[in-house]
Length: 205
Length: 205
Image 1 (cartoon, each protein chain N blue to C red):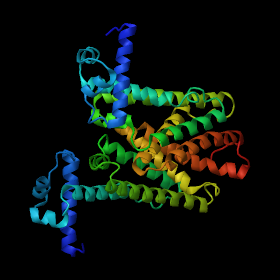
Image 2 (spheres, rainbow over the protein chains, first blue to last red):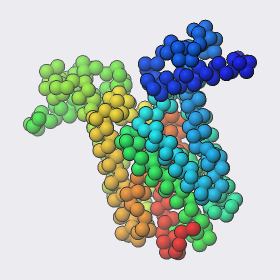
Image 3 (tube, rainbow over the protein chains, first blue to last red):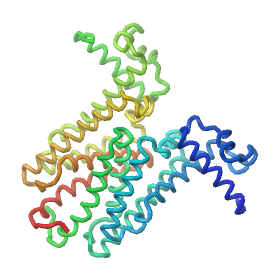
Image 4 (cartoon, each protein chain N blue to C red):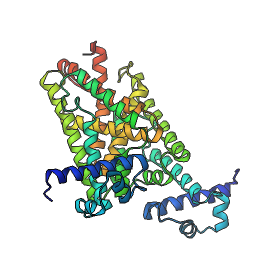
C-alpha cells in the first residue's frame, strides 16, 4: 500500500499508540478499541491501515519495537570505533534493560504471535541480522585500528556477543538480576581486548 | 510430605508421564486425565501426590526438566578438567539443543506458569545457580592445572558463558539455526584458552 505523508503519519500514530497501550497493559488485554480510543482514530481508519486486524497491527508493533531496540543503543552502536565507544555501548545496553526490567514488550509480542510463525520469525530474524552486523562492523573498525587481532572472525565474535546479550536479558527477565548481562558484555569486550597481545606474541596455547 | 519408597516411585511415574505428555502435545492441551490415563493412576492418587492439582504437577515437571538439562550435559559438566572435556561439553550442549530444536519444554512450562511467579522463579533460579557453579568449578580446575589465568574471575566468566548458552538457545528457538550457540561456546572456551599467554606476557592493552 502506497501511503501519502498524512497517511503514513496516521499509520505511525496507530502503531505508537498500540505500542504504548501494550507496554502499559500487556498484549493479551489490548483490543483494537483501546488503540482506537487512545489514538483518536476510527474503526474504518484502523482497518484501512491494518486490513488484517489485530494480528497485523501487532506485527507492525513488533517491527516498531525491534527498531527501538537498535535505536536505544545509539549513538554507540553504529560507531564502535574506540574502546570508549564499546564501554559506552556496554553501559547503555545494561541501563536500557535494567530500566525495562522483567517485562520485554518484544518478547511478549513474540510469544503472543507465536515464536515460530512466519511473521514473528521475520521480525526477530531481521533484528538479529541488523544487530549482529552492527557489532561485527565495530569489531572490523577495531581491527582496522590495530586494536583487535585481525585474524579474529568478526561475524562469529559478533554472533557470540549478541548471544551473550540475549541470554543476559533472558536471565534478567527470569531472575530479576542484571549480573549475567553485565558479565556477558564485559567478557565479550575483554575477549576483543585480549586478542591483540596474543597475535603479537605468537601461538595459541 | 514424607513418602514411602513405593509412594516416591508412583509420584515419579506421574511426573515422568506428565513430562512425556507435555513434550508430545504441549503444556496447554495436557490435562490431568491425560496424565492419569498415560500413567495408569487414579484421580485420588494424582491428587494425593499433587493436592494443588495441575499447577503443582506442572511445577514438579519443571523441576524434573531442569534436572534433565544438567543431566544431559554429563559426564563432561561436573568434570571440566581438561580442554578435551571442555570441547566434549561444547559438542554435547550443541547436540542436545540441536536435537531439541525449536520447542523447549522448560521454556513453555515457564511461560505457562508465568515467568515471574514465585514457583517458576525458584525453578529457574535454582537451575541457573547449579549450572553456573558447575561451569565455574571447571574454570577453577583449569586454573589449578595452570591452563587458565589464575586472576580470571571464575564466577563471572562462568556467568558470561551461561548467558551465551542461554542466548544461543533462545536464538536457536527464534531462528532455527544453531550458529549463535556454537559461536558463544567456542568464544567462551577460546577466551579461557587465550587468558593464559597474556598473564604470562604481562599487561592488558
